[in-house]
View 1 (spheres, one colour):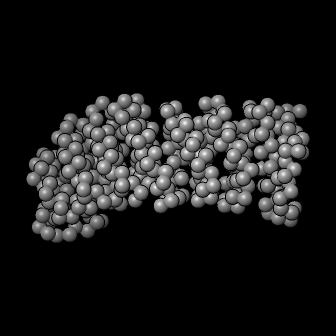
View 2 (cartoon, rainbow, N blue to C red; view 1 turned 60 degrees about the vertical axis):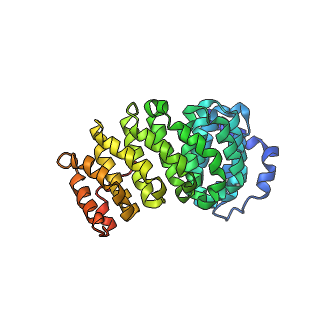
View 3 (tube, one colour; view 1 turned 90 degrees about the vertical axis):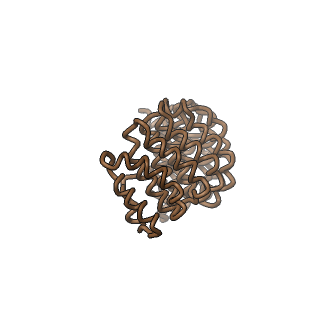
Length: 326
């Protein structure tokens, strides 16, 4: 028999292990009958340490079934979740990275039904956070949980924010720009829950935006993050801590950052309204120099003139770039 037959045999032979599971199986006429039988057999393989070489393949199969079932898979979670979370803590590094990724995908399917398992999920995140190679997948998982829980996510944020912002360090922005961008994406999914932490988040993001040794992709992403966040969050208190760094970026030599900076200033103009006029002298001086070389500079100056005159510029006019996605 080939490997697949060995796996099936192992799943089918563990009668004692799965007797409790089969007691609650739906009847054969149910649409859930065959998926439940299949998942039960696959779970038995995950219980076998001797079959660890098949665990990744088994989890892929289970996830395929869960994606097919959608929210109908929720009733099968008790069989799977504790096993997966135990594997996260005991697995080899390569499998652990895969497991965090799969947990993120699972949350995208089951949404708020992840609640009963959150304590163990975050225990694993905090335990392995210092392993840099795992951070991208853990950030993806955090973002999916934040999107699923929304306001209920608040209680987890205080311990996460220091860890997430620590990734936006000078060294990481140079060596691991992709991870830094994933931090920004995860922060964005916190939505209004992030407002209490803007006093530490905005300085960290703006520092990365200004950091000359950082990856250009990471710096652009930081500026774009500020542009989008200013549309959704109350950033008035932090206007000076955003606008002065953007003005310095505009005065700097990195031309790739000039247009994103002007776009971010347009978003801030809309968010701040007449309060934005306080920064008009500074911004007029540095943007005027870019009027003929940077797309959007002339339009920004025209909108600033309108705002100074007490006019309300329609939000649609502020969106001089639709491509602000990370």
